[in-house]
Amino acid sequence: MTEQITFAALSVILVGSALAVVLSKNLFHAVLWLALALTGTAGIFLLLDAEFLAAVQLLLYAGGIITIVVFAIVVTERLIGERLTQTNMRMGGAALVSVVFLGFIASVLGKHALPASRPEMPGDLTRVIGEAVLTRYVLPFELLAVLMLAGMLGAIYFARPED
Amino acid sequence: MGLQPYLLLSAVVFSIGLFGVMTRRNTIGILLGIELMMNAVNINLVAFSRYTAVVSGMIFTVFTICITVTEAALGLAIVILLFRVRRTVMADHLDLLKG
Image 1 (cartoon, chains in turn yellow, orange):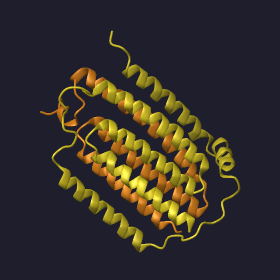
Image 2 (image 1 turned 180 degrees about the vertical axis):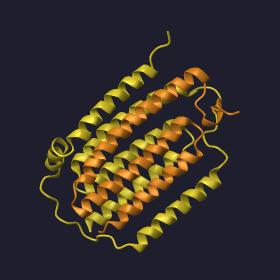
Image 3 (image 1 turned 45 degrees about the vertical axis):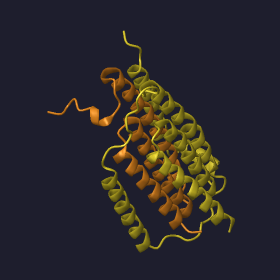
Image 4 (image 1 turned 90 degrees about the vertical axis):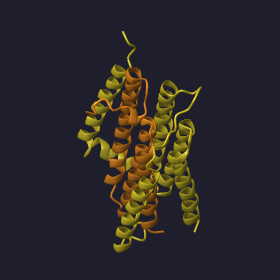
């Protein structure tokens, strides 16, 4: 019973803040709403017994991405003076496409039998994830490290001061 | 509680992100929509992983989160570079390749 109530509350937070992200007129407010949406997702992860992923979500997403986006907005946005409109003229068409897409997914979900209860997980999840990452998935893990290093160097190269 | 509510929630969040990607004019706003969509995908992966007791889904989520962060950092670096060259980040003003 408590699971249903928590899920309902988190869903309201998540959907409400996601709507605010796409509809808010001020881009700065949109980023703050995105922070709430990402925190709500961390709550959903906790509800699914994935404590480690909730922590990663908060650290990388809600911590990292929000900070970078705020910096990018401060650098590129005209915060004083006249404001440009933030949305284009295709609201109706975009809403139609999104609703049709959602209806399609919902109809697929309705057609298939999905598991109704959770099986027992194999022991402590954080430990299991750590062991799998350093044994079976060690190659993708190292490639990920190379990717992040390359991405970081690329971002620094792009944003270097003009000479 | 079954798997279905989680999948439905993630589909709703994904659609909202899609709407944002299609309606925002600002490049950073489009990136925010993409973040929402990625987030919905992560919810899907974790929910399936939990309800089938296969840990691979959660490990994939660790990977997708890291790749998304790299993508966001690079995307915003490109946005800053674009702003330096064109003095605008509105997607409909960036029509340099238009014939």
